[in-house]
Image 1 (tube, rainbow, N blue to C red):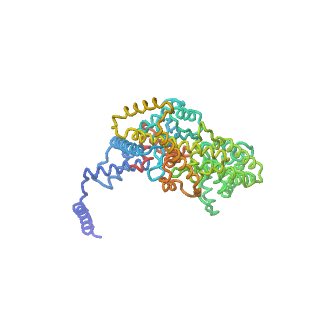
Image 2 (cartoon, rainbow, N blue to C red; image 1 turned 135 degrees about the vertical axis):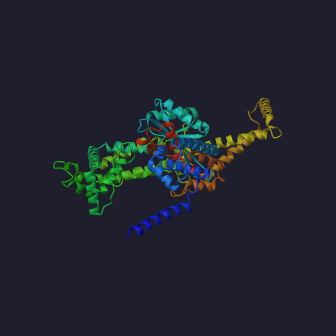
Image 3 (cartoon, rainbow, N blue to C red; image 1 turned 60 degrees about the vertical axis):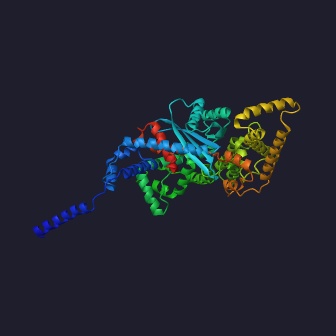
Length: 563
């Protein structure tokens, strides 16, 4: 190509480029558009749990500039302030939502971050107007003082005060089995009447961990499996070879799972994955390039592989029960007694040939019975929240897991609670009736007149009219309770909240009681899930975040449905 042609081509392209810029001039970024883009970036940071410092990264700046060259990316300080404003907006929204419900349950747990800072997570749960389960994160609160029972109780009180939740609205606190947290729940129960509910998932995990240690053959097998997984986790060569063997054998290309004692069912996850990958793992370990001579002991013995297979069968019901009980979008607490009875049956069958596994079955059954003995006890002086919830769940109201006498006690307790609730609701009505020709300011005078009448009528403490009203109230509640317990039980697969939505008008008093009990979760999983989000936010790159900003980011991420 000649120099003239090359020059002509160069200048034509250059001219075209200038022409394109002239014809397709980048529009300016208006204040409205800039605000929209900034808000979108903040929402991305909150939703994807990115560090606020991302806005200072060169790659991020270049990407944003490509999307809109005229948009000036604000500083990290700007986004921090915007996050604080958004936190206040969402907190206000939540306060308004919580004002519209009368019954709230809390879950709580304590966690330590990578920066060795302690946090307390608190979530709230209630049943909405349309009989749907609603859950919100309230706080991932930084803790600077000792985790004593009295401090924990005060911190929880501070949280509900922060969101303007009256103490009388709280019906229960779900927590783990830690001695300090249990003691804190007891303080709150004595102070406010909140029910103390121990986390069912944590309790099941204790049953499994104790039972796995009960027989020496099982504890040795689990320890060997753990060492085997650790070997693959630490050896890049072993991991690469394992992937090759998985492809050759047409197996699923899943990684091995390491168990963590504090993580529910993680031992089952480790053993079940090992069973799935048995042959690729064995083939990898038999490769001289992977396993040095004298280290073949890493592979499990045939009898240990057989033991793992049987253990997985007996551990699977625990996994299913825990997964079900950890749900937030459906009712869980009322299903607990039925679930425990079913779990005990599943643990005991089938009968295994292995003596260690039979020993595990026996010990696990005893542990479940012992730890949940109080679950099926009903003491009139201290009503059992779980049994009352089951009685107000149309799937379980027959309480088949109780003796006939115990069923009557629970039903009587439900009637007493319904009568108390009805009387509480009826108090304003009674006052209006007693002073139907008076103004609100005349109420004290009406009360004085009532006391004078009581004094003159020495035969009774209440008027005949009030006695008739009280008797009618009792009959109304009795009839409502009688009709409810005469209903045909709902299928276990059906949603009890849908049933209550359809039947609330027929059983208005019991419907409100159902709202107060069926909103309580069976586990403290919701507050533990906060720490999963907080753990991502407090990564090594973000460990410099202040505890207050960790709380705000976790709050916004966990409540992103309100954004």
